[in-house]
Image 1 (cartoon, rainbow, N blue to C red):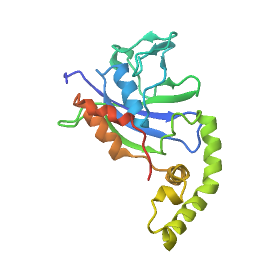
Image 2: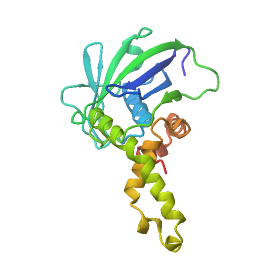
Image 3: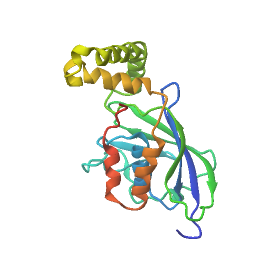
Image 4: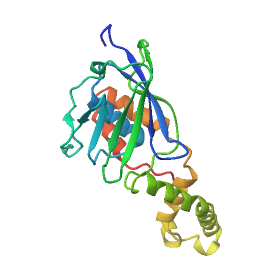
Amino acid sequence: MSDNTKIYQFKVRLKNISPMIWRRFLIQSNKTLKDLHYVIQILMSWTDYHLNEFIIKGQRYTIPNMIGNHSACGKYGSDVKLEEFKFRKNEKFLYMYDFTAGWEFEVRLEEINSPQPKKIYPICISGSGASPEEECGGPHRFNELKEHWLIGADDILSEFLIALADDKNSDKMISEVFDMYELREASYWLNINKYERKEINKFLMLYAKNDDRWQEAFAEVVYL
């Protein structure tokens, strides 16, 4: 890390969702938009399968996704370093992902600091809210699902516990007596206010070390 490298403290939040789902993280100024794209994907436990765009200072930039596709409207931005934008404190820009679903993130630069010795970047330092399943249909569908499941999740979990306690089911597999899809869904919605910072930072550290295992972060997180 050069002497001129700074540490950017960003806060990224999903738009059109309430309560807010957000992450705060630190990343080096000499990292690229490609790095920032991957960091956001790791922060959300998403798969990098869909197209994306950054809109920064009126210019659109795109990063190839995991299968090599990119937006036709955006300028190729993989090699553009964050420091080239000369961001000012509290400056905001937009990150869009999956144009059909319409996931939009506001990214705001909160602080510009010097790096701390022996600290590994990027790193997530705080956040709130479980990441939506990226294939759920976008923010508006997510809000509808949340309203539905927050009413029924407790009932489903209660039914599951009753089924486990029933002696007639003692020799059966769980999948034989209960709908595992419904159980996984209920478990997710009951944990909707949590996020997996420890798991996120495990993959961010692998990414920082150029360890290919960071791509395992693109596997689905199941709260069960």
